Image: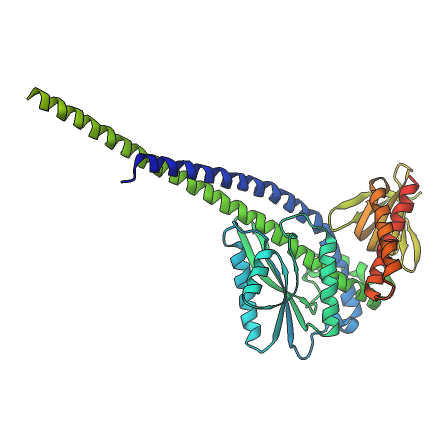
Length: 298
Length: 136
């Protein structure tokens, strides 16, 4: 059995760990609140944007923009991998990386060139280790408060790459925030823009449809669509980043909560061991004294 | 006046304006336009510039917008902008610094097109901000 001193030291160290995990939990909680607010703030913009884009696309038709047309021969794939910068958030990063690796494996099987853009250090480290082609990396974005310009700068370089032929398909891998306890890694194609004839407009019923059909457009619908589509990529990317950021904080919160609980359990266990050891020592001492007294008598 | 129309100015971060107005005037790419209630459905891109409107209580208000587009419906105008600020919220010091930076860059980097265009856009935004802030 461990000595009393050893057990005591161990209890002390677990207590300190518990303090740290508890503090991290609280930090993650407050950051999560901020991230969720930003997600809520973005929703009206995204919804309106999609609505307008959907109605425009219907009007302008498929060939309106090269961004809508799938390339005939796909040779270069680009993956935007969103992960967090820091660890200690459970399986969060691993799930995202596994998702990206799956996508990579699937595409690599078809002899395609694959390159990466990294948001977040964890994904970058993975790509570096695996010797993937990396185009650019952005650290300190996910997990902090970032503006729309981050998304739009990256998006415009993606669009440029797509138009110039450096990339034939662009995917973004991010963590969708479903609930506090659930974040799902998702791989989504953002270029070519898959189908804008959004399910949205169908959901909302036909009330809006005749309205939109009568819109006067300035410049003409096709041209307007050409201007708005690249923006759509920014919107998609921004929403992916927001989701990842929210998910990261939620994942860290859960992980730290579990760690704090595990610490409490461990402290209970160790305290029990400590008490047992102490009791054993006392008993042994008593036995000694009693034994000695008996010997003197005899 | 026949009635008020709802004006919404939305950025990716938040609602900047959401109120009933008498008239809203926005800088369309092909020319400035005003919207009253009962406007025909209309969709346009916007230049960097100022949206101004007369609030329901008759006060005139100004909002800086850039990188946006607007949709007008008979009872509602929605402006979606990459950035938008009410006149009172403009940080004029920051805008001035941005203006100087953009001017420096323009002086130096005329050779490279992409940077040139970006710097010019930045200068344009800064200029409009500064000008609008000065009318406070």
